[in-house]
Image (tube, rainbow, N blue to C red; front, side):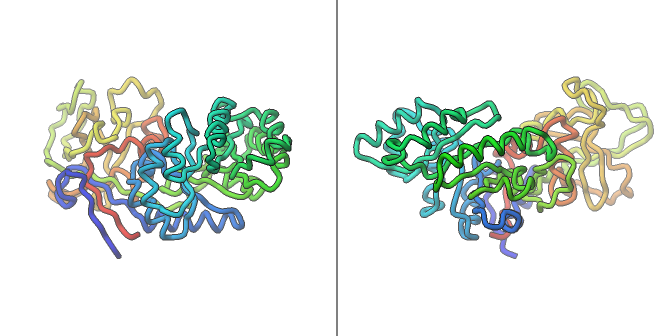
Length: 385
């Protein structure tokens, strides 16, 4: 198995307080699994937000070598950073284009996804200057965010003067409730997008992100755009997650301590030991994206009945206790034999043994937020690719 290390200027992987193993081999396997599900549709990769926090350069280059030729990013800065990594691929910009970006759009051969008459007018002005770059159109079929209204998009598609001169590379929309397979919005948006697609006969079309892929072939059209599923997150509520974990996060045990019954731990003294216990103090906190809302106690922001998160160390599931702080968290390791867990060992926060989305649920959030808030203090190891 091939390993590579990038430590981002922090301490070496083997001794870091917090570290990530990015499973590039798993990310490629997930992409190939989605290719099998999507069958005849092309499978792109959404790599915005630094490839969901896992590292744009390593993730995108690995997927590109595996055969992925379509990438989606949020903005121009991400697209410019991505271009030398995937020199021949198509790069779509979800936020479209704005005044002052014309030179980069042309020079880097980028595809803005135009979402409004304002953006379309700006783009057409660029074409009047003699350029003819590709573009895509975003249609709002029910998400209520970016996009032309379906009726406006249909008028464009049926406008022979417009179509004779300007042919979009793609039309796309985005599903609002695809993670809920039986939600009526899915069918309503599908039917709306089908009408738009008919008006743009011969133009590539795309509707499904990660969750939409699992709704079935009616939703696949010509291209699907997975994001969270590539990185191992749950795409559909209530369904067993078929994806392999894209990343494992670990924190080093800085100290093992014995605590007496009646003693407390961390800010606010919110956790009091009922029996003599042993704890592991680890080097990860909310500055590392290990959110305070995951704390085992004393967090009024979380009103559910969760008791916080668990980590895994040497095969033992250990609960996080007390309030998570900026740089440090505490786990109760009393279930393990004495002296079995030591300073310097690593506790898995999420990854191969602790589900990313299980941790997210305990924090009252989603796996997307955990990944994209990882931060820069982790030492990183890239496995495979």
